[in-house]
Image: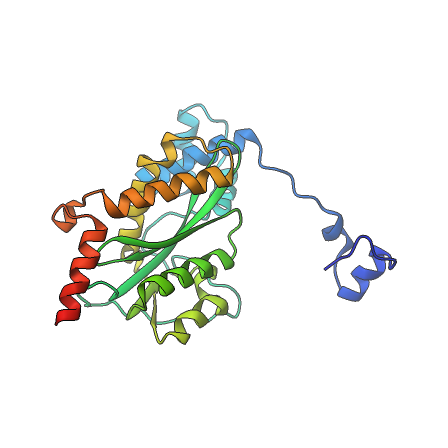
Length: 275
């Protein structure tokens, strides 16, 4: 938006665009090594105890030798996109002006592939820095249909994952998410509406509905991410590509009678098509 090589002074460009000059000259500071270590440990604690808030997490970290206060823990949790799971007014905040959709899964038995898909975003630590991972999950079979990595909590990488899933596997009847700004964004919901998909969003007291995706995050992190320290986004991408091939094609699930997600998805699909 601001052209630093243009003949027009930056001051004048800011005036024309109604921007603050301080925001143009500001250069964000990189996350410190100490904060990265804190964020990695917070991620582990959140997976183990998702009901804990900033105050109790800060107390636990202090007992482990970290010099950190509740406010700083709260800041880091916000940067990571994490919050305590419990009954409350909302699970995530939508973007300003974004449309919220009703919850459609009440009393619905999810038994068939492409009946209900879900999506969520999680934080991934690296050796230096961090990434965000979004996954599209078929709830009946637990199959990961598509995923993407990003270094920001934007909407575009979520849209890319959604478009890939729709292109490869067709359209679900219902797509369920939380009320996060990435999923309430018009760019995301428009893709679903164009395919005639019914949009469902977790509402008041419905945090439990994303439990299948939360279980996926636990598997991804303890079986892959925490065992490695990725040096770069390409390395993380290649490692997760291998892991999700294993997860879908070779890893048996007890809830699926020890079938893999691929076996469950395609066998259920054959039965559905035959019916």
